[in-house]
Figure 1 (cartoon, rainbow, N blue to C red):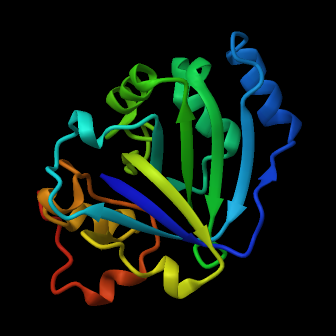
Figure 2: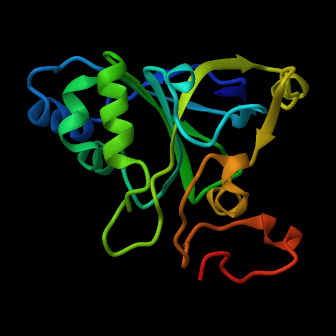
Length: 205
């Protein structure tokens, strides 16, 4: 089970860029009125300590969290990446951190569990672009809490442990800790965490 606590003094704002809205409406005529929004803040990702690394009925939900999307993908690009699953999306929230310029996160709400399972099954672990190395990491998310207190956001709930939101660091964790089962090298993400690593070689090469 994954939950999010977000340190944010910002309000959620609708995305009104015509390109993104028009693209969505054209590609998903059966669901032309989803909510598009964005919010700035620092995301803290927590995982229940006793959870298995594989999804199970108790760990799934209709809300998904895409941990890190490279910034070269626009909103319209991410919508295009979502493909045929668009018609089952009710809300896309793009979360940006002013201190991290090379990536953003996405919270996705879907119409039901079947739609959420299909989105996760199809796109989790998929490359965002065939020519690039970054993978799409998707987590089932049970709750999202926003707070103006950085202390509250960074304090793990009882029985939970915090995971890094940096995709490189998250991949380097043991699968039983991160819930991520595979990785690729040659990331273009900027990661200030590398100074904490004892070695820089790929863990799976």
